[in-house]
Length: 150
Image (cartoon, rainbow, N blue to C red; front, side):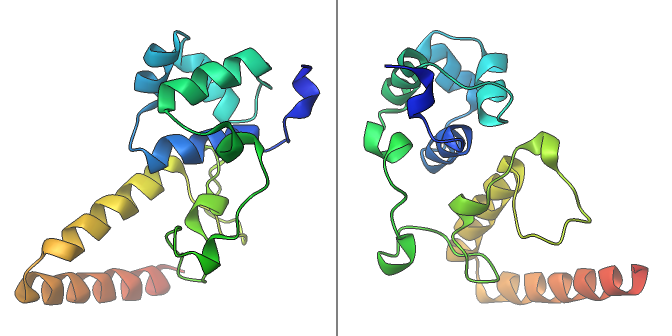
């Protein structure tokens, strides 16, 4: 099978599959028997992986090949995707860390930001009412400072 069978977003799909499982690039690379920098270059779209490499990564993550190469499911109707502040599936908005552009007008998130959002979601589920109120105050303050800085 030629490398051309993969869609151009195979790196983004691999990254999203890895993040859904809470795995680091290093862990996936070790399990797949490839270098972590190679996984990073695939996820960042710098290189296009061979079929054999994608299968190794798929097995390392215990993912379905359909998840990586099949048509994108419409997650909005199945409730399987965390939703951004604008109502988009966060997994569809992941971009490589190296493409980070704070001034960009398009909504997107780096893997680091997605990890932070996941951590926050866990914290919110278990936080007391007082801690939630404190977080609301902090977020409101941070938001008003950000507006004042512009």
